[in-house]
View 1 (cartoon, rainbow, N blue to C red):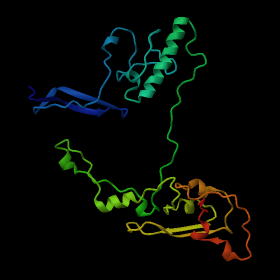
View 2 (view 1 turned 45 degrees about the vertical axis):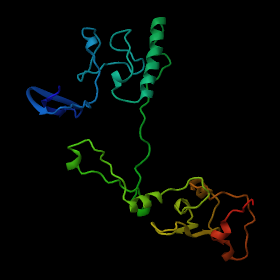
View 3 (view 1 turned 135 degrees about the vertical axis):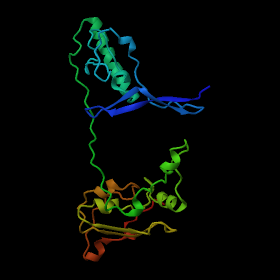
View 4 (view 1 turned 180 degrees about the horizontal axis):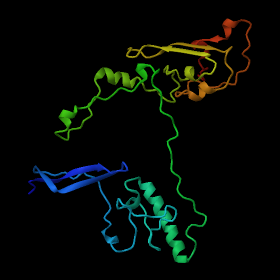
Length: 266
């Protein structure tokens, strides 16, 4: 029967290089009483089999290996997967296993392990952070309420609550109804247009009836770049094959909703 959990004093969490490398004082221990212990403290590789093998380890106890061949400091000994990379994706572990298999085959065949092989390329996040300063409040994602730290630190209750009805309604209205051929007034076209030829307004957030109230398109400004149609998530905007758009008065080239509706096949 479990009576509690004995823990050691943690004297350091990060090392001098700023890396996560805890250090414990085994001389100072504390027992936390309890009848159940839930093990959820992560995992680590058991490298005891490498003792006196000659395989070099880093100061943090990780295996030193060649990132192209997966070979360790001992010739003919290869490694792959999370035992060398730490926690990661299954795909990454499989990929390193493939590289190790190629190296083993070449090693047994007496071939050059590095011939025509390139080191793995580190992927970098290429997209800048999104600026939400000027985005309308109704278009922003509603925050899910959470249990306070004072409550959740004492139990394992789910910390995320549900949205209150009014917030849930506003969150549902953020749906863009993609590929529905129904304009939802998202204003992507208006924001994208480089010549400011489009103006869109819709009913306020939370209104019983959600619809576009104004959709004006000044074709005299349009340069037919097609960016608005590309950005439209509902595919309401399309580039037509009509080219006879000349008019004798400016008023007739200022399109409103009724004039822009596509012709029905029925």
